[in-house]
Image 1: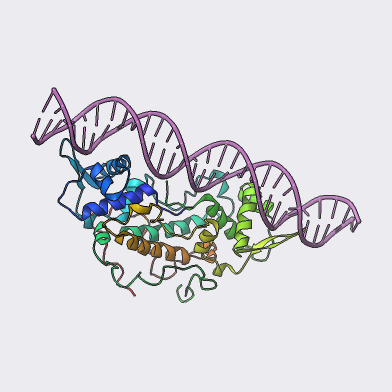
Image 2: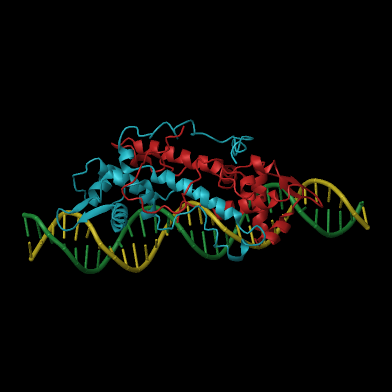
Length: 165
Length: 165
DNA sequence: ATAAACAGTACTCTTTTGGTACTGTTTAAG
DNA sequence: CTTAAACAGTACCAAAAGAGTACTGTTTAT
């Protein structure tokens, strides 16, 4: 069960998306928790972390609360992921296995993983909080498509590929 | 520490890549383990799983071993991931949180995550084992690009997205 | 002064992973 | 027909990561 974002990150997008709907209001953590059906301490934790990364702005004291740190258009999913999964980002750690990798194949593999990382990364960067809120971004007919249930590609992999190069 | 592939999957690509270098040989699990510096039982486990998904073919008995189940060009990273992370694929489970999601925002978020999933998925599909072995595939000018170190987008989010297609 | 909120730390419980052990089953070779 | 080298399958264990909670500050409007 991998290649998943953590629940915390999921909560983060939930919370932020909700807040993006009312850009002017100030939300208390308990408020948000109640509205979204999450645990109050959990939401608190998420907000605090988001605050550390300037994705939300906090107002302390009585009648305090949280608001987005900047306009929703300027917050990408990638940034949310970065904030909540304290990690340099990357599908592989690749190195961790120490002396297990640089035998003969001198890790051309790593280069390829980095390329894949790049694509994934961009996918996350290209979706903003504002997109999450507004009806149908779909940004150009580009990536929409029946990508939803691809399981049996069998034989049609690494597509046209010969035409390229 | 998420948005990572599991080590098992990492090992899988390692093993398969190595095998792809010698399409004709038959590799024993212990052989591969020794060559790649991994634990023999671990490699065995990985190979068995890969076999269940027809990514490798096994020959039993003395002098038996494993070979690729089909040409390296027809094996995508997506397929390896699918095989080794028994999971329907998807960055979020989205549903698991039961009654925590469908309040007022009626999950437009989910739709967006699915879109992101699609992009990620395609990135994984577009890299084949053959690509891992050969010098520089880079598929076509499409997804390649200076994607390597994007961190500070700040204010430039959800861009013009491709014009292409 | 007080109460409602954020801030920070530390801890616990559960799940998932990664890895190992053990017991079959198959088959070439002597 | 016995043996040894390989795959096949199951079950298990230990370590790490996630997720959530509790508790103790600090700030500030009333």
